[in-house]
Length: 149
Image (cartoon, rainbow, N blue to C red; front, side, top):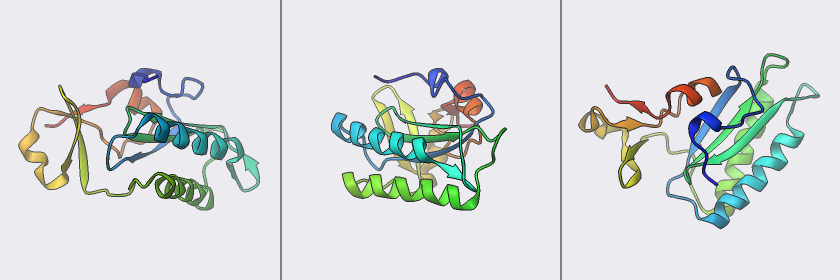
């Protein structure tokens, strides 16, 4: 079931730090299930400096993997962030999808989410886009997608 951005990972606070990975193409129902299983397994054991992290992750709108951690109690370390990146790379390899092409932008259109080159962003002024560089879950919940100036 697709959630709207205000309902993403409801057990985590707005201040939770997020990492967003966009798929090079829409994910099938089976690929979403495989991805979510990887994410669930990862967050269940995610730790930093030997302490468990309060975290969550989800597949959103057939395109995005969102990983979030409540850093108020325990901040993510470089090694713990690296482990999340490895998990996303494993997901990509298992379903043959690239989640690391950062030169694309994802636009919300009436036909669905459209992937365009970052270099073509100026042509889409006024369109709504999914900013993959937001910092917190609150940013996603309150202003995602954003309007291109």
